[in-house]
Length: 429
Image (tube, rainbow, N blue to C red; front, side):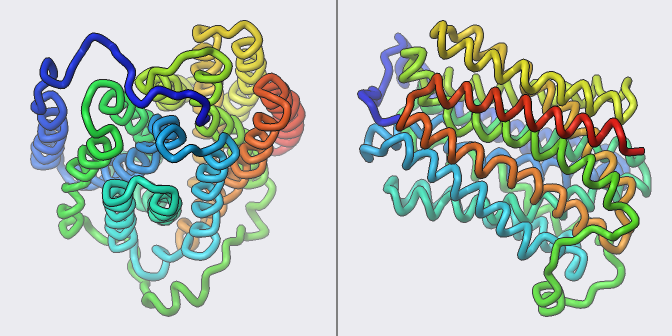
């Protein structure tokens, strides 16, 4: 948290030795490569790639502040409870957006909601750049949470519908999950590298993120997959997340797996800086970003392995890995071991990848076409609810009783939650 965290860390590399091209050329190259790929691919594969990319950059923008929390804490004298509250506001805001606007794209179309999500993410980045203060930190996180709440259900439904026209539903599930988790991994790495080696660590990460959002202009060429649209007023007035009675049993099995997955994500993402600084005595912004990135990258990589499992076996395998990973977090705090913390992040990330991918596959297959965004948003709402309460409680326990008690409480919670999840999944056809 805010305890004696150095504003800069001497690494032997200065900005003079790292010209600005090192920062801006990768972003320009990424945009150029995306445009070239889109011109070579045939629709709807081309459209799926663009939707997945925009999904990716919104999730990337949401995670840019994560490696910077320690810098904010040092400069603004913020306590671990305040930092946890910032993260809690973000997760609660995503949940509130899903509850109020989750099915908006079912009424107004996928394309405008996707474009609006990218614009909100850009607004959040501009707020962070304009004023590095506590009110701006809350305001920027609020904009990001609205963007994430808009994009998750709409982009998942969009990819599912485009997949049915060409690449296939399984490919669309992989694209949606990799865009979601991969974007979060890339956001932490990008922000951690710039915070560690570049000047203006509270400006450059967001500036790079804004550059990567420029392809939002290509949205105008995306096809609209919602034929029966009744407008914004009806979309806002009829907001109510729900699941049709006929699919509630398999949906519950999928949603519980998502709840457990995001509970682990929330703990590690919110408290990595405090674990590193207070528990492991490691003050590198880059390492803070890499630990979280390793978790999300393992989740994204697991998407390609889970295809060899049935949905039931994949879910159970993922749920089995989560309490093991939580135990590794406890061991890392006790032994002050960075390798153990990385192992926990990778193991937990892989477990989330299995459980979350299988849950999302269930949801996209069983959802009625007219209610696809509604059902997907309900799934994400349950998942994000899993990240709110455990994370806030962990932050309070860290301040009152220390990291060990917080980590131990996480491990016990994960054992109980995954046991319940596995029992329900085992009994659900």
